[in-house]
Length: 79
Image (cartoon, rainbow, N blue to C red; front, side, top):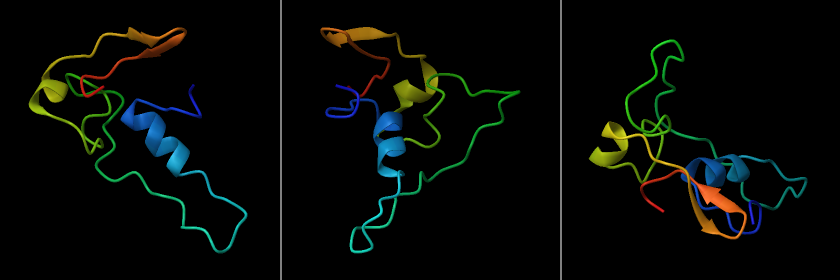
């Protein structure tokens, strides 16, 4: 399910950034936004500063890991 149905925005961004060998394909995506300082992580979701779906809740509250399908877990307020 991770590769066939990625749910977390960070997972989607990572998979979109994988280059292909096909020269006719779209270029690999680049994750936009500011990379947080790992010695001073932001409150809330650690990906919120780079996530296109981030809301105030994401920036404030750490999302809890929850099972969304058998064996498929995600920690994201937007999913």
